Figure 1: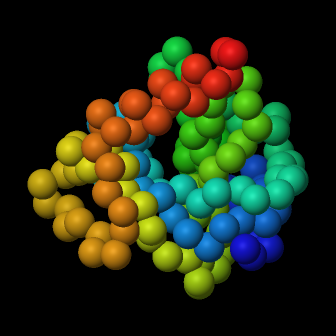
Figure 2 (figure 1 turned 90 degrees about the horizontal axis):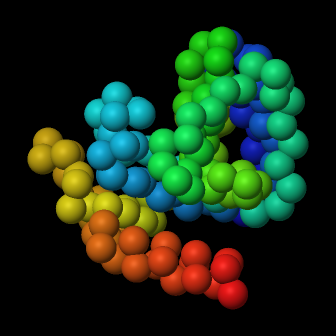
Amino acid sequence: MTQRDGKCLCGAVRVSGTFEDTLTACHCTMCQTWTGGGPLYAVRVTGSLEITGEDAMQSHHASAWGERVFCGTCGTNLWWKMQGKSVAFVAPGLFAGQDGLTLTEEIFVDHRAAWMAKAQDASQSTEAEEMAKFAAYMKGQNS
């Protein structure tokens, strides 16, 4: 875990917190569209996250459960989160320094762009596997 500070391209939104040193890459078609073609890379928040510039943030509810948050001033992708939940992952591009981060997981790999190579040392899971995990999570939330 590492303390990191980050900001969007214009600096209107800033984040500070403790994060894991591992990355997840989501290859779902929505993430590919949102990022302009590649996966959404995300690093997990491990403690409290301080956010400033909330007035510049905008969000889009891309599904019945997900919310994609971005800077309304410069358009920087900030994070994807469950609606009504706190931020669990942020885009590592917010950090000025990304030293020490390692890609350990790729999800929705059955949607990975044909031109993108598989990460050799990262775990791989398909859409069906991720949706089964999500269904189990939601069942636990509704119990």
